[in-house]
Image 1: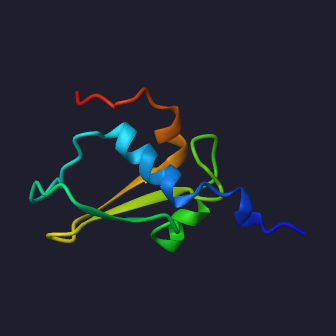
Image 2: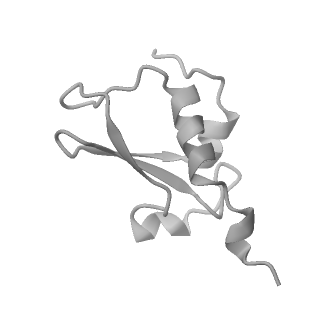
Amino acid sequence: MADATDNAPKFEELAGLVKASFPELRCLRCGHDQFYLDDQGGIDGMRLLHSIFNDPLRPVVTLACTRCGHIEQHLTGLLRQATKPIPKD
């Protein structure tokens, strides 16, 4: 029997999704351009989010700045639906 995580988006796919969405991504605090990426859902409470905007297997992608540690999270379902690259308003 296949594991449920076999259908989960691959780490590389999520990294590509973030890059396509934010090609000039910079830390919101210090301006650095290097991040750690966590595809395990981030904060446990975020795993409870279930809606049409969400990917139930990987609901949240978490980015942490490698310089200052600032963390930001994005709902993967919304990132997939958004026009790429996501414009700044």
